[in-house]
Each structure stands twice: as structure tokens, then as C-alpha cells.
Amino acid sequence: MSYLLYIITGIVGLLLGAFAAFLWSSVAERRRSTELRAQAEKALAEAKEEARKILERAERDAAERWERERREFERETRAERKELEAERRKLAEAQLELEKARESLNNRERSLKEFQKSLRQKEKALLAREQRIEERNREVISRLEHVARMTREEAREELMKSIESHVRYEAAQMAYRIKEEARLKAEREAKEIIASAIQRCAASHAAETTVTVVPLPSDDIKGRIIGREGRNIRAFEAATGVEVIIDDTPEAATLSSFDPVRREIARITMEALIKDGRIHPARIEEVVEKAKAEFDKHVREVGQNTLLELGLSNMNPELVAIVGRMKFRSSYGQNLLQHSIEVARLSGLMASELGLDAERARRAGLLHDIGKTSELEGPHAVIGAQMAKRLGEDDLVVNAIAAHHEDESPTSPIAVLVAAADAISGARPGARRETLEAYIKRIERLEEIAAAHPGVEASYAMQAGRELRVIVEAESVSDAEAMELAKSIAEEVEASMEYPGQIKVVVIRETRAVEYAR
Image (tube, rainbow, N blue to C red):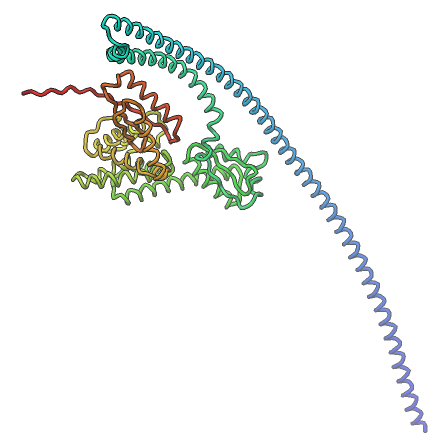
């Protein structure tokens, strides 16, 4: 019984111990949970405080950055406003200058009208003198009728036969003197008017051949090309010698210069800068030097390829570069290099047919217009000959270059062939931007105008219509009347036709005396 009591007591003790342990564990767990909750709440409070501080700092930084950007934008806007104001002032000054120019031209026009009025008065005086001569003729006829017992018609016929040529010659001489005086005076006035007009109006006519348009990926790049306060665009213009026009044209910048070589270098530079994306003065100068080197390499390659195409060799490297540069020049609407290649081929073909040195003929034909690449003043044929001689070309080639426009006398058949090939290339219908139909109509019209004048025996349009030769009857047209006829035909051509360049009118009066020895 006691043993059973011990067992029950032990079991009860064990149960009480287990219960006490469970209570103790629950209390400890609850205490630990309370501590963890307190730590979590503390960490959350600290995190919220840190987030608040970070948010305040971010708001403060954003406010400062916005303020800096606002000030920068206002500064740039202020600079642009100044530039716009300066442009407005320039436009106003240009408008004022234009008004002054217009007033000056009006004054000159009034002077010219007064001069024309004076001319009309002189013409009236000439007509009055002719009337007096006519009255004198009538008196002479009356006397002849009385003395010779001839009818008025018979006397008139005889008298007119005897004095007609003398009166016409005297009238032509007087008209020539009056017109020569008028021409000298008008020439002085016209030179001043033309010089003033060219100064203000030439730009609008030259725009087509003096600009290159560079496409831009977007309009945003325009601001980078201009740079802060225009420093980038000024550096570009100073380095290339080309004016850059940034206007309202979408996604395009315009390069303007009379020198096509400078425009090409500027185009290469602009495209490289846009592709690279770094645009600042130092970078611009660096890219311009690279573009010049690239351009020089390109023109030498063009020159070498041209020599290979024509089968030429042993040419001075400087001449090779000049040949390459002709690719970027034009003359009367023709590309200078293509025209020179055409002349070289024509010269070589004709030389081969005649058994001459075809290679030297092609060489002279290729180099005949190199004088047009020079900045020197004077006939391009003479300048080109001097360049070729200085760079080692032989005397035959030098003479062919100098003689192709008759500035020197040809000393070899090749020189004559080069001149003929140049005329053929330039006179070819369509070579200089003119259709075949328009070309034929212009030639026919020139000959019709000349043939319509009295005393004209024949007329021929030559050199693709750049020269009109008129042959007159020597018996019916005197020397003075021939000069008057040339002037009259030239004036009629100017008034009734449109043509490129100028047309030379040549009136030929020839007297031949023929006898036979028996």
C-alpha cells in the first residue's frame, strides 16, 4: 500500500513538475515575443525615420537641381534673345541699306532716261538733216528737169543712182559717231549701275551653285552645332572658310561658299561631327584636318583613276591632284573633269586616225582646262600652260593647252586637234544643259534674224550658237553700214532670244577684184 502511495506521489510530482515547466516555458516565450515585438517596432520606427530623412534629402536635391537647371535655361534663353535682337538690328540695317540702294538706282534710272532723251533729240536732229538732204535732192531734180528736159521720175532715177550710196554712207557715218559717243557715255553709267546691282543681287542668282545641304538626323542637333553663344558654329566657319546657315529648314543645315573644294571639306567635316556626336571647337579643328587629309587622298585617287582610264602615266603628283580637283569644278554647266576626259578621248581618236601620237594628244586634252582650277587672273589657257610647264610637261603639251582658245598660235597638229575636240565637247547638243530641240531652234532662229536684214548674202551660226557670222554683199553694204548692221543684229538677238553666255556677231564684207591674163 505504501509502495502504491509512493508511485502515485511520484506521478503527481512529475505531473506538477511538467506543468510548472510548461508554465515557465509559456512565460519565457511570452516575454521573448514581447521583446521581439518591441525590437520590430523600434526597427520599423528607425526605418521610417531613415526613409523620411532620405525623402527630405531627395526633395532638397531635386529642388536644388531644378533651380540650377532653371538658372541655366534662363541664361541660355537670355543669350538667344540677345542673338535674336542682334539679328533684328542687322535686318533693320540691311533694310535701310536696301532702301538707300533703291533710291540710288532710281536716281541712276532718272539719269539714264535723261540720257535717252538726249539721244532721241540727236536722232531727231539726224532726221531733220535727212529731210534737208531730201529737200536739196528735190531742188536738184527740179533743176535737172529744167536743164535736161527730163521728167521728174527720170531725173529722180538718175539722181538717186548718183547720190544714193554717198548719202547712205554719210548717214551711216553720222549715226555711228552719235552712237559711239552715246556708247562711251552709257558705258560709264552702266558700269556703275551694274556694279551696284551685282553687289546686292548676285547672291540670289548664285545660290544654286554655291550651297551644299547636309541632312541632319533630327532638329535637336542644330543647337549642338551652334553651341553655347554660337562658339561651335564660329569655330567651324573659321576652320573651313565656309558659312553655315542654320534656319527653319527641318533636319538640314546649309553650307555656303563660292569654293566647291571648301564646301566638300566642310561637308565631310559636318557629317563626321554629326556621326561622332562630340561637337566643340577643339574637336572641330581636329576633324577638319582629318577631312582635308581625306579630301586630298580622294582627289589623288580620282586623278590616278583618270590617268589609268585614259592610259596615261609619268605625270607630276601635283598635276595628278589638280586633275582630281577638276571633279569639283564646273564650266558652263559641264563638270570640268568629265569635259576634260571627253576632250582627251576625242583628241586621242583623231590623233590615231591621222597617225599622230595619241597618248600625247590625250594628255594635252586632259590638261587643257587646268587653268580653270587656279585663283590667278587672266586667260585660263595661258595660266594652264604656265602651270603645265612649271610641273614638267613637254613643250608640245604646253603649246596645245595655250593654243586651244587661240591665245597662242598652234605649233603642232595636236594643238589644233585639242582645240577642235574642246569645241566639239562644248558644242555637243545637250552637253551644256540644253535639249537638242532647243539647240536646233536657237541655231535656226539666229540665222533667220541675220538673213532678214537687207544686203545679207548668207548667215551661219557657229560654235554651238556662240558666234554668228554674216556675209553681206559688198556692192550694197559699205564698211560703216556693216558696223551698223552688226549692232542691229546683236540688238535684235538680245531682244528676241534667250541664250546662255553671249553671242558674237561678225559681219564680213569682202571685195574681190578678178582679172584674167591672156
